[in-house]
Amino acid sequence: MGFTSFINHRERRYTRIFQIKNKAKEMINQTSWNYFIIQGISDVPEHQIVTFIFILLTYLLALGENLVILLLVYMNPHLHTPMYIFLCNLAILDVSCSTVTQHNLLAMFVTGNKKISFYSCMSQIYFFSSLTATELFLLTVMSYDRYIAICQPLHYVTVMNSESCSALFLVSWLMGFIAIVPYIVLLLRISCYKCNVINHFFCDMKPVMELSCSDTFGLEVLIFTEGIFLLSLTPFVLTFISYVFIIATIMRIPTNSGRRKAFYTCSSHLMVVTLLYGTLFCQYLRPASSDNIKSNKVFSLFNTAIVPVLNPMIYSLKNEDVKLAIKGIMTCFKTSVIKNE
Image (cartoon, rainbow, N blue to C red):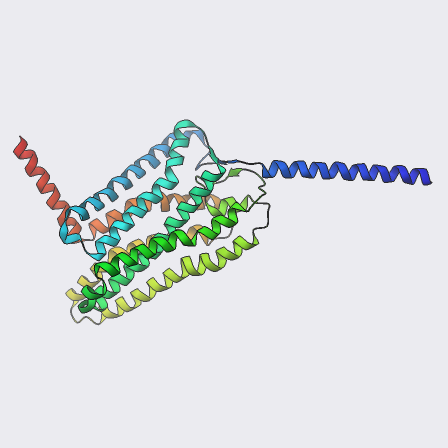
């Protein structure tokens, strides 16, 4: 009986050692990823060429449109006002966001290599999140600019002077890039991943967190507190309050033409705000499921590819000053061509 117990004890011991070794090997395999694999938009081979052409065309269109906005403001002194300075910052953000998310995607289509290094993935998460946060802060500042212009027009020149304007957009950029640093620090502390295949077309925080088998409670708390309240809810509430006062002021204007003119000055910004918040809410404030993962890719693609194309169109089509500046440049171009002929 004693010998049998001894044998059973040794067998249990060796089994335990074997299990520990297997678990350690599994942990090593899980923690040894030094790269991720981006799954992409679609796995269907027939869709690859169409998707590549669509991404390339939207990127080039966004780049061209936003560069035109920057050149128009630079070349026309009468556009050197706070509104157009903020618009230039928005154009830079749109181009940067498209470049950060789509340059690697276009390279994957060309080379067929879907690998991205661990630190490149973390850098992409940081810059995309920082640019998105900066855009939310900048749109809040732009709503404040519209509030002063419509609700306190006599004080606009003194309140929105060059110094305060520069301070506002600099603070927006600094807050956007500083606020994301704690997220990246916590992401870098994740030591265990179930696999290295990211079910997205770029490195985003949420898909990477879903791969983690480490404790992400601290990161989830940070997302809930800072991410929702500071980076999302606070800009949204401030923008909403600004437009409550703007609409109330517009409704008190006695003439229909005056009301239309006042609303026309802020309609472009309101459309851009609606586009951005609408896509972000649909993208991040939805329960996780396989169907929602597919739809999240669609919303992400809309946010990173379509919105940067639409924003310059909205401001150029809804703004008489931009239209006049475009017409002036076209006239100068035609005149120079005729002279050269």
